[in-house]
Image 1 (cartoon, rainbow, N blue to C red):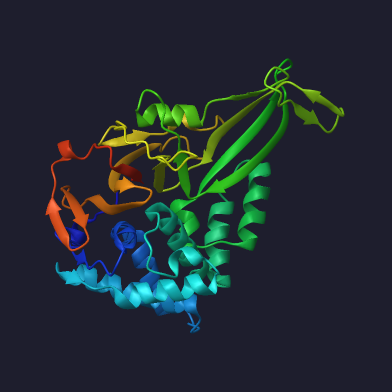
Image 2: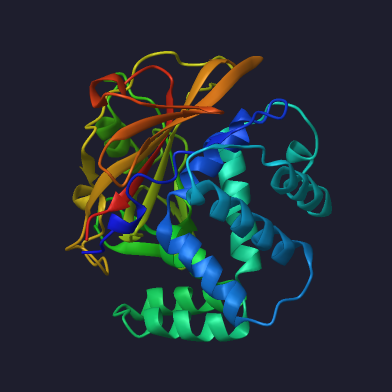
Length: 344
């Protein structure tokens, strides 16, 4: 089990709100509390020939900001880093993060993960990390998917955040598999169920879908050239050290679901949602260590984070304000995105 003692009591740094940047600040605090990523970025910058493209400049700005955030507990104005975000957003033609409007924190989190992913790709890194994972894969079909996917795009971010799903479509009468495919995700997007519990949201997300004549959505079998009643199942085939789960709090009319969604504040076990042929079924338990919260509605609101420090205490990170919070106060209707760390 990894020892995080060197991080205890550190990282309690506030970030100035530079005008609707609370959504950025809440994501930054979460990313800063992932030692494996930040240690690797430092290693990458020290051991690779660095080109001055915007992705690499972004890495440098992040490394400098992270170093400041963990050098002493203070308040920082992340001007240079946010300027770099807006510059890259413009380059990637992502208008969401080029200006000064409020945006979705989880969308930004996904965006920043993608930037890290792009910046950390190198030929040497791709070969060593990819080969290490490829050699541990037993299933040939998944190995082919894994190879094709990572030959195009692979970085340390995949090692940390990528979840791989297997989708099977089975004949409802003969119970034979007609089609299988795999998909890769960084974030699980969960519907809020009537029971208002995250466990039931997971059960619903991974429940079977019945595609049949009654539902007017039969599956077309290419081999037999006819429509069939089928069952579509989705399971986790390969999990990741970090698990990011977002609640769908907004409906199609952009109205926010303000109900409290309950959950175990200590952690989560994804074993019930693992595929029976999964690569890593033995290590399925996760500890909750971060929550991104949203107060308000779609027209205006505020983002802030709860993070479990390496001293095992929970803290509220609300722009420049950092304070300890009781675990009993974590659950609220403001909870929006949950970040879990897999138990070692």
